[in-house]
Length: 293
Image (cartoon, rainbow, N blue to C red; front, side, top):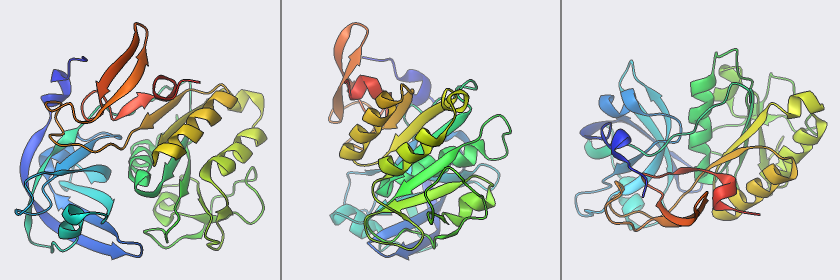
């Protein structure tokens, strides 16, 4: 197994304070916690193991969406789908909550691949927003973010002020926060939301990739997080265009720190298939290793 000690040294247990807790349609919530040690060390792709309620000792892994090391806060987007996250959804600002993090192997950026294509679906959107935050203001990289959801987005989409001539006509809806960071984004859904691409995120990504000249295409690397079928499609898309691709896996976890091996997945390595723990050997993996063609 991969030696996980380097990033275990930066996992902290904190009694975090809830700063804000916003509810959105589709049982979606954005939770901001004051957790300065986690905020200082978190990187795009990191997650935290959160105790939802004292009555539920098992924690829930939730991807980090944004941080402020200066102000000491960490922000998460999650969906209330089970008893634990439903209990978490009831928590109020001012309450304290136990947080273990940041955990996991983060995304890695290659300056030679300076056109990152970030594809997020559902609660897989947060790591893509975190990548965008990390790259905002970096003239070396020109990211594009494509987000998909089959419930209303956990923000109010707006027509983007950043023109994207490679996009289909009428696809202008964006995430306002990304526009504020001067990072272009476009949205996709099958629900007919105004300004969104009517289809899958991979369809919209393919349209953009096909419109790029060869020299620009050679600078693209794909980063993605979302449901397993979506990640399979993203991996196939990367293979179609011969592009490198990193994916962040979403798996059920118990301990979250590599002890229980309850989140193992089969990964292809140079020595053959191996079982890797998503929590500490991932959650970020090379797409070709997880979804071999």
